[in-house]
Amino acid sequence: MSIRFTLTKAGVRDLGRARSYRVAFGVMAAFFVAILYVVGVKLLIAPLLARPELDRDLLAAAVTGLVYCTVLIITGLSLDINAIQPLVRGKASGSVESLLATPVTGRDLWLALSVASILPGIVVGVIAGAIATAVLGLTYLAPNEIPTATVWMILNCFVLLPILYFTVALLVHAVGLPGRATSGGVIAQVFLPVFASVIMNLAGRSVIAVTRADLAIVQLGLIVVLVGILVAVARGVTKERIVLSCRR
Image (cartoon, helix red, strand yellow):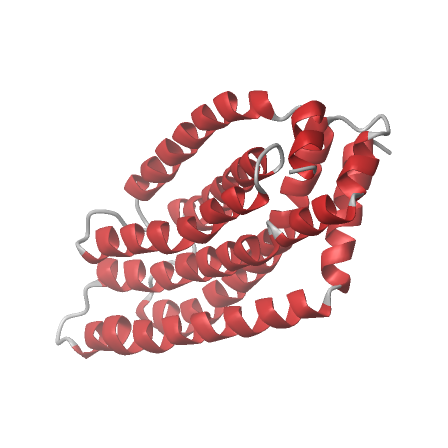
């Protein structure tokens, strides 16, 4: 069993044991997703179904948009809640320095913390998205003979979006581990509202749609940009700089 796997497993287990994390994540996720569905069904889907002639493409875009936002919100909230607190506690308690006194490298710790912070959100987000796909599809798409899950919808919601958030998690810890943990936290806190706002505005203007390739291009482009930033920032993720950051 590799060091990285062991560290990641321990990180996920610690988050699962934290009652405050589970409660905060569950309440916030339920609240925001509930608002999303009330607004989405009332303002997007209901008016489309009330038209004399149904626009099948718009209905598919609206329904899959709700699925996409479900995964987006749940995964983003998970990263926002648990990305930085474990790192802050680890630096303050000395556990980070203790780990680095062993054969654990800076990169081992960086990757393990990044995966542990985003993996629960991705798993829960994908499961919630799959449930939303089935329920919304059976309720609104299947009766109108519209495919519930297309290739682009699956790629955008369940492949590219989790990869995008994993890249963000890597960046958060590449900044917060060798520097101030709160600096990485700012990235996690800002990314969800900014990205969600941009995507929703573009979708509302029919510039992009979950059922089309254009959203995939946007996400791929953003992933490439973030990877480019990571290549530069990750050079500073060294054992020496991490230890120094713990003593500030």
